[in-house]
Image (cartoon, rainbow, N blue to C red; front, side):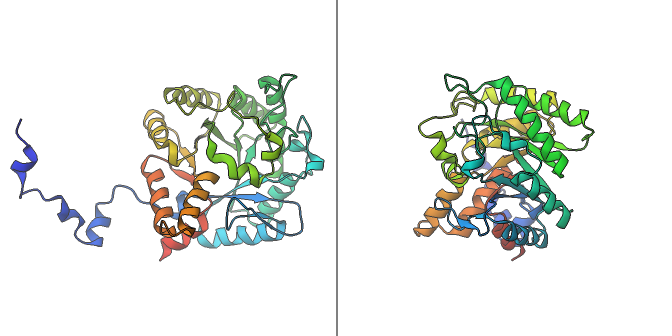
Length: 334
């Protein structure tokens, strides 16, 4: 068989399209901009912010520091913030009732953010793991199995409380079957027709969540347990199509793939199959991995972060949760 590429040479020289920066940018297939970025933050009710040991340069933010961070996001043109609460042990219970209290940490934070920065989209996590003494995303039975339908009843209350506080987007990350339809119905019944649902539709049971669990103080509660009976098996790909299809049919406006870097094949598959926005979460372990390599001198921090996030965008994500969002916004202006 003849090599047609050799026959075309020198008429076709691919490097001509790479000669200068101007040419490269004219023919670029994927571009990253500030509109793609969503900044996840950890919030605490303590008076001072706290360093997170497993996530260098990331903190559990007190209210004052959170407001300063929100102002910084607006100034940099980042449109969305995602909130993850750090709940004191005294408020945790087996059923996570604190999750839906109107005067809870997350509810008060939503209200304050929307009051001071109405233009900033507030995305809230809907799951029980920060609120349960056992660290699972739902209510467990006597065999430590997370019960699906009982959990959904709590998730409905939690999502509604977030909407009532002013959340723009509620994001169920629990992976219970049927929870999107139940939450959508609850929001509609209470006239929150325009509150969006971002479903963690394909959330894999990944080892890369470790630093996050440490950040929200759920790792000790979870102990030697795992979430394999409700989060997706990393060995499965086609299963993600069914998960996403179900969530869209139940009323999800946007779907999430998590983690992002290790599951770009899933992002591409979902983006190719469904005509809906697809978000991806560059999770705590992926952040920590790049940060550790940069701190050790193995990688350039800026270049490795930018390449990693660009690759997530290239795979089909239209919105990217990343702890590097502020840095990326600054770099994009350079």
